[in-house]
Image (cartoon, rainbow, N blue to C red; front, side):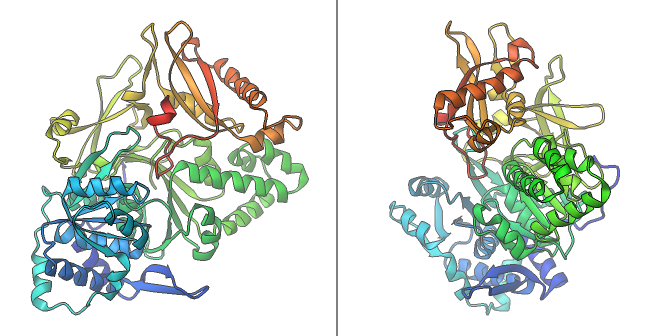
Length: 554
């Protein structure tokens, strides 16, 4: 826990956040939205959000949704956000991944017994065709809601008891394990997570964010919507991952909440641009080394110019990256810290709403997932000789349980502690180091434990490799062996080996095997990657995590 914390207000529920922000920030813009005209925008103030929130709550009550479950499904938008707030107040909101099939979306609605769905029109029509009976509404209809709410109805909405032991958010998540569970969260749990975060990471009313990650995930919803909204920051929306650079210049955000793959992409683009534009005597330095290393070995005047130019490419005001949802390589954090952008890595799970540990304004360790968040506890269960064991956590941010699945709930709860299923160790200074999922551990015939994530991190250090997953494979003798499925970075291979035919699969595989051999030379023999398979792509989740099920582990 941090030695120092910021004094911040603690909210009990979303209704308090909405009213506080409307009273404190009034006409300040909460959302900047693209309008129909080219280069035109619509601004929604905090007061307007409150008005639409109460109007939508009143509409839901009129329709008989009180105490019912309401699904929301669609691209990130102001409408999604307001609907989420109202649905979780009047009843229980069920955020659904817009990337799932219509059949799965309808199955989630059926499992949750949803009374209604709000969604983007195209998604709505497809889900409706599946035959599940519910009321289906387009998000756009929210703007047509009658804002005139009677004092009696407003008093009724304010009187709705939002108890900390009641499920107000139901999230069906498959994560990367393939088996869907419904995670039951209270608003109180999410608000507890917001409170612990703002105590150690300063967010200001003048901050702006560009929302990139899907809002149905607690990572984006808690940290890049609810938290920022509670602090008076402005939220804008990305037009798509291919438009990030354009949107950065357009909206000029100060904060980005990202996953490692996005940071890695930005770092690669920046390094390439710097190498092409800096004085020739330094170009090779940026071509052959990480951005952080190259910046540290560049003279101050040129370093200052590079920093200024790079920050301009990111909109000119970027000050903070929050990165999570997957392991991030330390050099990526060092890259952005070297150009003056604070980059904070954290660790969390949907069941924890989501943050468990993190780096912050008061402590930073690029090699660690951080320290336990204020107000929470964390420990390692049944550590081995190296101190590695299952990560357990306790706090007000924990889920209520898995929806209609008491056995699954009992399996992860132990005397008030939540068993994360993740492996790691905590050093004497309280730093958490993740070693992977307990289910992913590869056990060799001689009883040695191999953590795939460690090997994947090593593979990721080589520019010839775009992506990789390490799984258990079978050697010729039938014994368990270490297997790596690798996506080659063909552009990098072509740049590095001018005579290489990148369309020759065998030639590409040979170059990749050279990288693997180099890694094997640096690690104990029992950890060696014995089987190498070069593939065109790996399946991912909507937060760009490589799936640890399906074709990826075959």
